[in-house]
Amino acid sequence: FIVLFIRSIGNAFYAPSLQAIMPSILPKDQLTKYAGYSQSFESASMIASPAIASVLYSMFPLKAILMLDVLGAFLAVDIPEIFREDKEKTNLLAEVKEGYNVMRSVPGMRELLVIGALYAVIYFPIGTLYPLITMSYFNGSVRESGLVETVFAAGTLVGSVSLGIWGGRIDKIKAIAGSIGIYGAGTLITGLLPPQGFYIFAFLSFFMGISVPFYFGVQTSIYQIKIQGEYLGRALSLSGSISMAAMPLGLVLSGALAGPLGIENWFLISGGATLGIAVFALTLPALRHCMDG
Image (cartoon, rainbow, N blue to C red; front, side):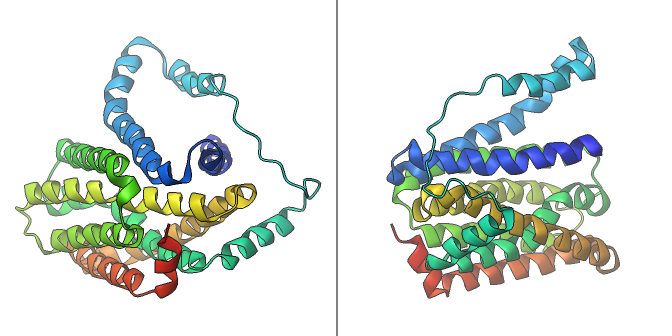
C-alpha cells in the first residue's frame, strides 16, 4: 500500500507533465489526433500486457519484473523547456490559485471541469463494478470477467485509432457529449438486461470502450489548445485532481447503494444519470465556446 501510494504521487507529476509538453512539440491542429494515437498505444498495452506479463512471470521472479518499471525511467528523452518570467515563484498554494485563475479566465473551462467531475462520479465506479455484475448478476466466472475487460479494451483501441484519424475534423462538444451519451446508454441498457444477457453486455462493452477516447482525448486536447503552455501543467493537474476527488464520492455511493438496490438497478440509474450529463453538456453555451478552434 505504501509503494502504491508513492507510485500514485509520481503519476500525479508524470501524466500532466507529459500532456503539458505536447503543445510545444506538435501543431495545435494536430493535438486531438495525437490524443487518439496516444490512447491507441495505451489500449494496445492493456490488451497485450497480460499475455506479456504471464510470459515474463514464467521466466523471472516478480521483483525482477517490477524493475522493468524502473528501467523505463532511464529511457527518458530531452523535451523542450518552457520558460517563465516569474520563474522565482515557488509558493505551492499561490501557484494552484494562479492555475485556477487561468482556467477561470478562459470561457468554458469551469464548465468543462464541472462536466468532468460529474462524469467521474459515475464513470470510474462503473468500471470497477464490471467484474461484480459479470459474476453476481450474469452468473459468469473469472473467464467471462476477463472477456469483458478485453472487449472493452479492444473497443477503446478502435476508438483511439478512429480519433487519431478523424480527430482534426470533429466537433469537440459533440464528441464529448456523444462519448458520455454512448457510455450512459450502454450502462442503462446493461441495467435492463436479464441475467441471461451476458453476451449482449459484452457487445455493449465494446461500444462503450469505443466512446472513451472521444471524451478523455478530446478533453485533454481542449486544455492543450486553450491554456497557455506555462500554465498547462497545473491546469491539467487541477482537472485531474477534481476528477480524482469526485471518484471516491462515486465509489462510496456505488458501494452503499449497489447492494441494497441490486447491481443491475445501479447500472440503470447510473446510465440515466450519465445521459443527463450528456444533455447538460450540450446545453451549456460557454462549453460550446471553449470547444471552438
